[in-house]
Length: 116
Image 1 (cartoon, helix red, strand yellow):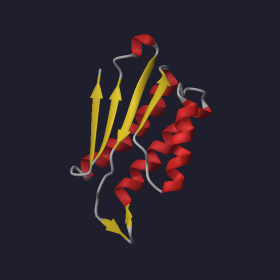
Image 2 (cartoon, one colour):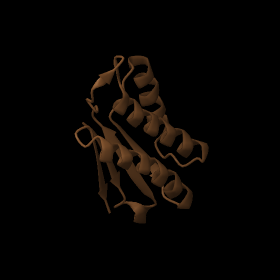
Image 3 (tube, rainbow, N blue to C red):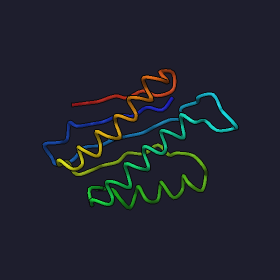
Image 4 (cartoon, rainbow, N blue to C red):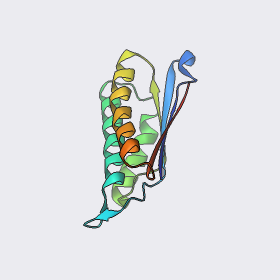
């Protein structure tokens, strides 16, 4: 199961963290776990969008993890630490909506947790 955790308890300190852990373990179609692929694309889109707006606080660490994961063909267990502002919230809300849709349709494979 892929577990997506959003921690907003640190907003007063100016940042929030999104963690993605685990493998969806959904049925394979043509040798691909499409739920896992979907989770990966949401994660890569979030990272790219935050990076373009200079909102990643652990960019070097993330870049190494992403490059390693591409070589291995798997998504890593990853924690994204991002500046907290209106733009990061807009980006994060969009990506979280995708994870919530996956959770709604694949309850056995994706779970989203939030901490406020």
